[in-house]
Image (cartoon, rainbow, N blue to C red; front, side, top):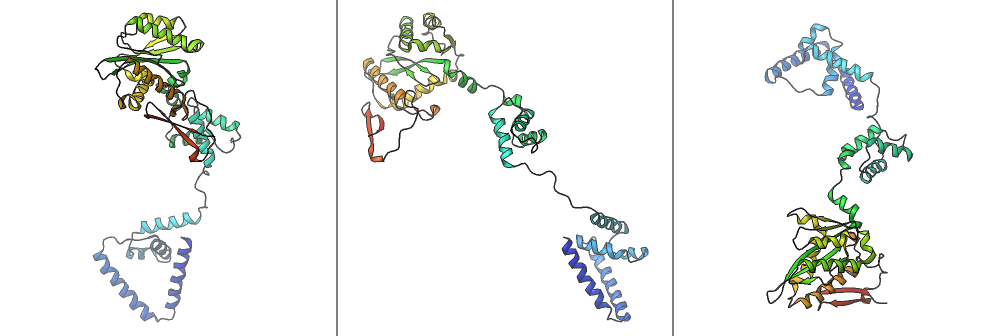
Length: 357
C-alpha cells in the first residue's frame, strides 16, 4: 500500500510540474471550470464514494490551503482533520507481528493424543506432562486449554465419565453370559438351546444344551456340565449375566455361586443388557439356522456343535482383531492364491480357507 501511495504522489507531482509551463490566465480559467463541474456533481451525488488514496491526497493538500477554503471541498473540515490524524498515526506506528507464533502441528497433535488416551487429565495435567517431555518453553497451560477447546474436547470430568461400553470392556475378562434361543423343526416342534459365551474371548459353549422341555432340573444340570467343561477356568469369571427367564431357577444360580461367581440378572425387557449373547444368536441364525431345515434334536445338536467349533477355531471376530477366539494370535505367511485350500462344513454352508504348504 505504501508503494502505491508513493506512485500516486509521484504522478501528481509530475502533473504539478506541468502546470508551471502554463499562464496564470489559463490556470484561473481551469479553476473556474473545475469549480463549476464540482457544483454540478454535488447536485447529482449526495455523498460520492472516497477510497483511501483520495483521503490521503485531500488530507495532504488541505494543509496548504487556508481554513476558510476547506468549506469548498467534498468533505467536512472535521473529516479532513481526522484523515490527517490517521496519516500521522500510520506514520509513527511501528510494524508488529500478528500475535504469538502458532503452535507446531506436532505439539498440537500430542496435546490431543494425551487428552484422548487419558480421559481424567485436565489441561493443567496435560501441560505438566508436556513439560516433562521437554515442551516447557514451547507451550503454556492456557495454550493447551485453547487447543482442547477448539478441537471440541470436553473437560476432564465429562471425558472421564464411565460409559457402559467402557465398563463392559474393562470387566469383560471376568464376565460369562448365558441365554436361550428357540429353533422350530420341520415337524413344528420347538427346541430350546442353552449356550454360554465368554465375553472377553467370544468363545461359545453349547454343551449339547438342546431340549424340548427346559425344566429347572435340566437347566441346572447344564450349568453343572458347563462348570465341568470349563474346569478351573470357571473361577476366573466373577459375574454371570443372564435374563430373568423363569427357566433359570435358584438351583442354576447355586451352581455358579458355589464356584464364587455372582449371578447378575438383566433388567426387565432389556435384551441389550445381554448384548453379546444376543449378537451370537443373530449370527448363528443368519449363517446357519435360517439357511437349512432342522428335523430333530439330534440334528440340531450336531449342527450347533459343528458351528460352535467353526466359530471358536476359524471364524474371524472384529472385536479380536479379525482373529478367532481359539485361533493363532499371528497371521500366517502370505502365499500365492493358488496354494489356498477350502474346507466345506455343514454341507457347504460354511467355507474355511487355509494355506497349503
